[in-house]
Image (cartoon, rainbow, N blue to C red; front, top):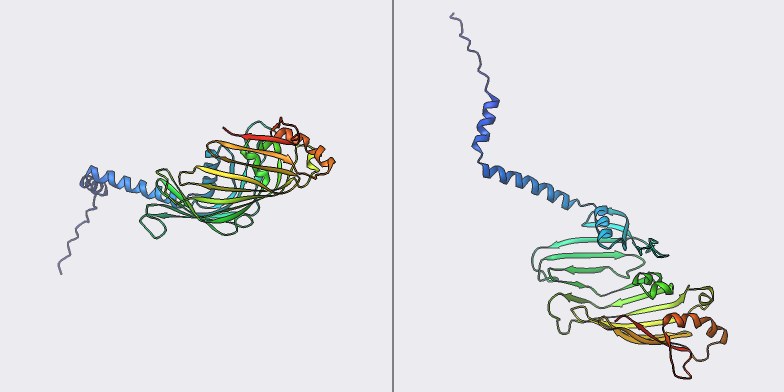
Length: 300
């Protein structure tokens, strides 16, 4: 029986095949493959964008005034403790005020027209137990944003963030906010699309000094406001009850103009304790008989 001839196997050159494969891929294709890989990485980072990165970005953009503490989740769905601070060198600087509970959010991109939005943008859902009485829905477009109607309860201590004279007054109490659905646009004002609402300041007190702090409450006040689709604001302030009466009106363009006075029939001791507060609020009236009335001017 003839012997079988054995032929040695010839190993393939992997290095040569690799060079051949590289030569077979055009340079433009390599660029597209690299771009696709980079896009995948960017999309992954965007999808998994951590909520604490969002918190850092908001803190930087707001100059430290808005704080998202203990942020959990992602940009698209998460929660945090919402707080506010007044940076600077004043006595209240860097003292953050945290709202009760946690704010929860959900963000969904809008790629085409829908019954809720006619332009691409973002649909944002917010819920904050103890602050918002119902979930808040925002629609953010290329040149406009809309807000659903709602109500909110906030501590009046936040008013110090508005600057002078609010940070001097050191107000305490609670604020109840109510507003209708509205849209604000960077283009032309939309006739009939007017934002409106009320702000009720309940059982207001001031901690300027011990004498004024002993007058509790100073009163309850109501502000009726409205704004057109360009954000131009007009408002009116009136007193519901209390020994310190404040009334007036204003706008985002002209500021506030009004008066503060001590209500008739207020006990003498209370009148005396409120004198320093009147001096802080405004200028005394010059006409006789109005010694307990000051004019208030805030803004331009």
